[in-house]
Image (cartoon, rainbow, N blue to C red; front, side, top):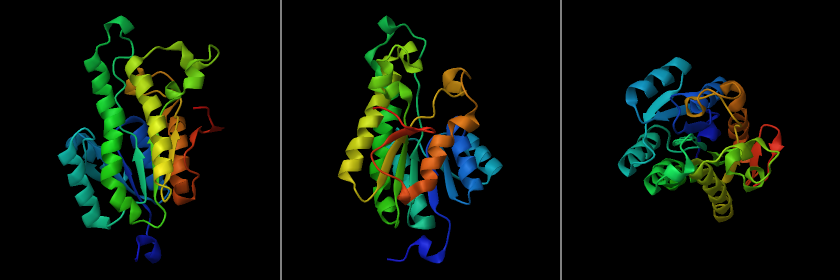
Length: 240
């Protein structure tokens, strides 16, 4: 089958939750690397403004809504017929400062709807387009908070916070990464940790977003040449 790569066209990348923060910076960097980037967001006005600002293409997509996801797939199919790299970046951090005794099942459900179920919903829906690529890859934006090893280590930064919903959702992301990598050997699938990055979700605490986006950008640029079933930050592999 003829692919875009046969004509020397730019690889196509789609990033969820990319109108601000890590997603937007990842999109900006990949546009600068001559990728065709679909910047997606729930809110059309914010997403379109962000896409126009960095030279990406806007696509409305709410990872918690089946109809929205399938509409995005069809739009991507109409314009490009394939997808080379999917970056599952959309995330809900929940209420990080909430006392654990006050966290409800609904609080956890809201975070899982985006971070876990949203990732599955988007991945499953875009698989046919990814498989139309000659070198498909998926980058799952996880967190060191999802590392059982680090959160259990008193000397690690990740052990300083307790977050029932967010931390456990990112552990689930890591396991989904491993399971998908085993089940889909024809697709390169990896999880990355941005580290503590100054975004709305962290109360602007942490490293600059340009540094935080590096791990996702590096893995996205590797595309089909990436390893598979790994968890890494910008310095290399990190423990599950």
